[in-house]
Length: 99
Image 1 (cartoon, one colour):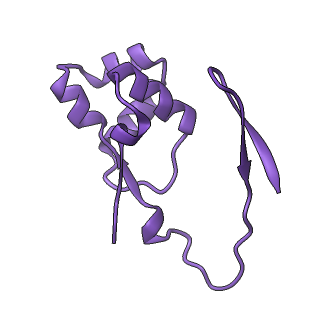
Image 2 (image 1 turned 120 degrees about the vertical axis):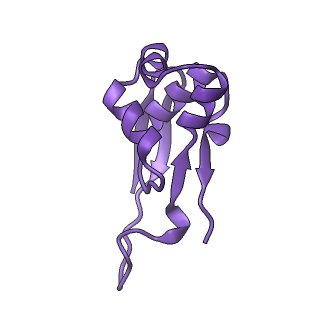
C-alpha cells in the first residue's frame, strides 16, 4: 500500500506500508537509532529549550529525543526541523545503531 506523507517544505512524500508476517520481534536491532541532540547542543552552547525554540519542535519532544539512548521510531518532521536548527542534515543528526 502506498501513502503520502505531507512535508511542509517539500510537498508530499510517497512511502510504502509493509505488512510483516510470522514471528517477528516488535523492535528489530537493525531499526534502532539515536538522535545526537545533546552532542550538537553542547557544541553550539545551546540548552534544550533553545533547541526547541529554534526548531519549533515541542520542548518535551526535544527533551525525550535527547535523553533516549536507543530509539526505534521518531517523528520525521521533528527530526528535519531539529536538524535544520543545528545547520546539519538528518543523516548527521541521527546515528544508526548497528548490531
